Amino acid sequence: MSLISTHTIAEHATASSCWIIVHGKVYDVTDFLPEHPGGSKIILKYAGADATEAYDPIHPPDAITTHLPKEKHLGVVDPNTVAKVVHKEVTAEEKIRQELIVARPSLDEIVNLHDFEAIAKAILSPKAWAYYSSASDDEITIRENRAAYQRIWFRPRILRDVSVVDWSTTILGQRSSLPVYISATALGKLGHPDGELNLTRAAGKHGVIQMIPTLASCAFDEIVDAAVPGQVQFLQLYVNRDREITRKYVQHAEKRGVKGLFITVDAPQLGRREKDMRMKFVDESGVAKVQENQSGIRKDEGVARAISVGASKSYVTDHIECINQSFIDPSLSWKDIPWFKSITNMPIVLKGVATPEDALMAYDYGLAGIVLSNHGGRQLDTARSGIENLIEVVAALKTRGPWPNPKFEVFVDGGVRRASDVLKAIALGASAVGVGRAFMYSFCAYGQEGVEKAFEIIQDELMMNMRLLGARTIDELSPEMVDANALHSHVGLTPPDNLYNTIYQPLALAQFKTRL
Image (cartoon, rainbow, N blue to C red; front, side, top):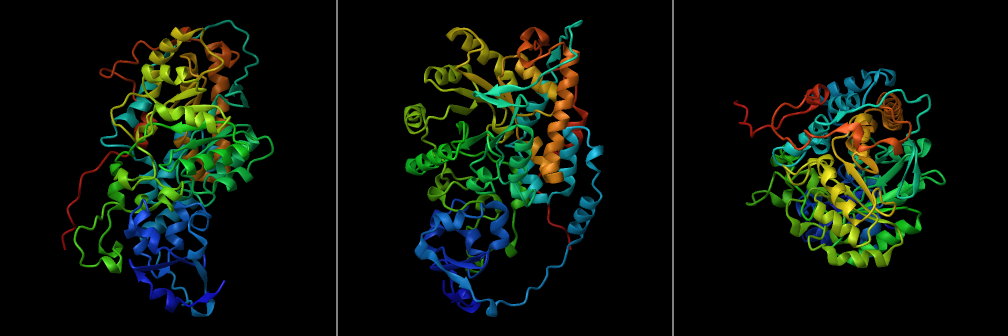
């Protein structure tokens, strides 16, 4: 490839001719500007300059090389023209954050999953924390996800030989050491340089199933390559408007050995996460030179609208306020299910089901299962929790035949922080439970070792709770072991989860500018 001077690159800093540098290589992204789901403004901010620092935390490393036509790969930066790097001054806020990282408690002092979340809150950058922790609108659903488990009470059985308890299970026919799988969460590198690879490596060591997110910071093949032989992985899918891209992606995943396809169906448009939006508000320093003195520039869209490369050409995006700029297809409907079944032999699960009616339709379409989920409270606010919907869904599915049904599995996610939550869900009819944020916070705080510690905590809690409940295996959990009569009561006294409430960051209102 030819050498290109930084002076030449800097001459291409407009919307009509936009070059950027990523990892020392030069790309012409002019034609791509209108297609970028994060909008053109974030790319133009780095027009004629090095965009690597902004690109890395929110893109798989191969995103630009894979999805930009080869003729747009212009060359490499001439190292003789690169100016000496001037190190940025470390802010007082960053100094405090670095000191907190050094002062973290040892892993031996971590006794529950809440601990990981509290530490992640302290050491993550404000923007990363806002992105990970935010939920839609008034954040009622994300809090209800947690509170719902506090309205379910155990009815333990006694005098059973619980000297040996076994919490292993099968999920979609695949063995799992836990009745829990790692649910998909986006942008792992915002919290740790190794991103989702922390989950892959820990899951491989402990026999836990990982769901690979469409919006991972690491490349799909990088995640699969990091798995140990025989490690089970599922794929979470956002359906692209371009079905040919979807077909290739799904079939590639199957060829690489992925064992299950979880299609997200609760996101025809992504929700408004106000904590994230407020953290993303930019001043004039965040506006590209070509935008100076222009009117109508949105300054509240920030990083999360720019976390992708490829729009309809890629599977890398996230918070998109305008669905018309999103690669996610809002036209997805039941009529597409036969097509999905025709392109893969993987079991297909719908992720984001919320009603018995849709659960029955999924069953009647011959799918392998559903996830009762509200997207971690990040989509439709005041939607009910997955655990609350579980009771009605199981009752409806029993009208189709004996239950449990080996050909149709029901999963639940959202709000799980304790093994007792897992046992409650399984007793009420869930096959297994998805955990997303809790595992993500564990690697944000401690990397792969944090995830492994999280697995150990869940195992310890499972052993204790199963013994106290009188259940020797997962199969012995039954509805009679829980009292869920108060689950549907959204008013009245719910025992507060003090640990969760201590960490939860309330929403804020718009702030006045600081007086001079």
